[in-house]
Structure formats: C-alpha cells, structure tokens
Image (tube, rainbow, N blue to C red; front, side):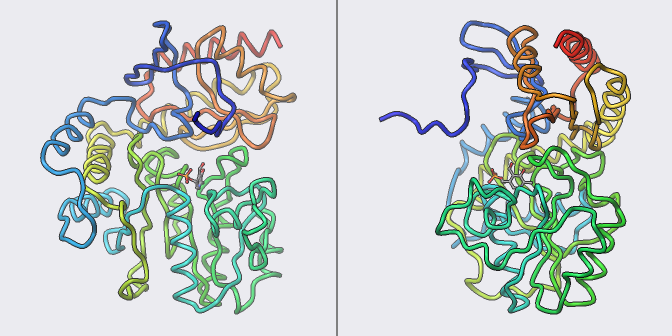
Length: 376
Ligand SMILES: Cc1ncc(COP(=O)(O)O)c(C=O)c1O
C-alpha cells in the first residue's frame, strides 16, 4: 500500500521545523510563509506548546465525551475571553470541514429550514454539507446534494437582498475568503447579511477557519465589521498543527441531547494544544503583531513588477499577479527556499506565515519576491 496523493507533492521532505523555518532531509533550511495551509499560527514547535502537549500526554491523552473533561472548560473560557464571545458555547471537533458541517446542521435544526446562501469562490471543506456550500464543482461528488444551496456574488448587496426570503436557513460566509484567492467581504456586506438574517430569522454563520485566530489583525476577521454572527467556525490556527476545530454557538441556540456528537472532538491533547496556542497569542501580542507585519508586507509589495492587486488583512495576504503565479512560487521554493501558497485563482499566491514572523525574515522574503518577479 502507499499513501493516496492528496495534493501535488513538492520534491521536499521536511524533517524538522522551528518558528518560521523548516529543514528537509538534506539539511536545507526553508522560510515558511504558508504554514501548511494557514495552520501554523504561533510558529512551528513553539516551546510553550511542545511543553503543554508533552505534559498532557503524560497525564491522560484521551477519553470520550461521556465523562467530565474540565480542560474543555479551560479552553472555552480562554477562547471566549480572547475573542470577546464569552457568552457563546464551544462545540469541539477535529477539522474545519467538520466545524462547518455541524454549524450548517445546527442552523437547520434551529430554523427547521433548508435553503443555504453561500458565495462565489467560497471554500468550506470537503464533507457533505460543507462541500455542497463550496463553490467548486470539481470537488462535489454525485452523492453530495447541492439542491438547497444558492451561490451569490460576494459583496453584491442587491443580489443578496433579492434572493433573501423567509425560507433561508443560513448564510455562510468566510471572514476573508482564503482558497478563493483572498477575497475580502466588505464591512457593509457583512452588516447587510446580519440585518437580513435578523429580519428573516436565518442563521449567520461565519467561517473563520482560515481567517480567525488573530491572522487578520483582529481575533476574528468579521470583527472589523462589528457584527456578531450566530455561529462561528474555527480550526487551522487553533491547534498550530494539532487537529482541532470548533463551533462557537450563540446563547440563542438550545442544545438538545444528542443533537451534536463526536468521538475525538475535545479530547485532552487537542485541548492542551488549543490552550497553549491561545496563551502564546495573548502573551506575545500576536494579534497586534500580525496587524503590523501585514501592513508592512503589503505596503512594501505594492510597486513590485507584475503585481496587479494586493488583497487581505494582517497576515492573510493574497498577491494577484498579471500572470499565473506557479513559476514565481516554484522559483521562491527552489532557488530561495521559501514556501508560499497557491489559491483557486491561478494568478493569486497566498502569504500566510506564522503570526510571529520576524522582521528580518519578512525582509528576506520581500527581497527574494522582488527579485523573482523582476526576472519572470
Ligand atoms: C475557510 C475554510 N473553511 C473550511 C476549510 C476546511 O478545513 P479542513 O481542511 O480542516 O477540513 C478550509 C480549508 O482550507 C478553509 O479555508
């Protein structure tokens, strides 16, 4: 047997990682500006995180949700305090898709309705409902039903208003679209969704799987718009590599026994990882640092050759070129040993480093990027 090839594989075998660096089996050092799809939030192998996981592993690693697991309360308290959602409940799962799957299910349980509004270029994961709400026909299997999903253009308030009715179950929107090429919903658009959901009794779901956890320069990207969604989904940076996801659930929702469930979600190791990440975010002021470093990077890149548009907030940056970005990314990786990300828009590359990316590393990237762009 061999592993199924999930993504196109670069000919690199990482064997060690620390902070924003990765080393391969040949001992070559790489600068990581991608964090393995925006997962590395506090840097690879952060000492506080490693210690927390080691200590937890020695005590107890797993038991199911059929017993009391106080470490879940500690995680929920800390997440509530740092995000400003103290009054919400936290349902813990293992991935972003699972978080969205459960959020959509919860919205449907709550409203008794089926129609879901999603947006062009959205990505919500690969499980049944999450993939149906994703705007990419290539990844939707015949068994996935899309009959209840309506895709509208992002930031088109008139279209939203036109298609809103009292049969809408939920609107699901990313805080900032990531896979779609870093497309930012306007504050007005998010406010409009909130108003229409309030008027019709629909549920507003914010997918902060990629844009959350401080990456945008706020704890959640939607907080720039001052709206409070009913459900917020998180994963990726939440565990800094340890698989964990969650749904933040407004107090409006009543939990009915057995409505939601999971075997692995919320186990001790995942919670220990989640707590350590939040402690580092708080102790090292990573949200402010992401905002500052993001503004610096974006302002420095504006006059680089071939750059058509720079989008994003904080350290969630999309650089749209006037040509496909694959060759630029290849040269950055092979010649300059720097990881960057692609997106579903072939011209847009994504920069999603750890939130504590250092100034010297940012400058090294800027220099290499400028050089590569001038040469393509
Ligand atoms: C916005 C968003 N939602 C959901 C997901 C799915 O997360 P996962 O791969 O952990 O299932 C992703 C993954 O890229 C994402 O970017």
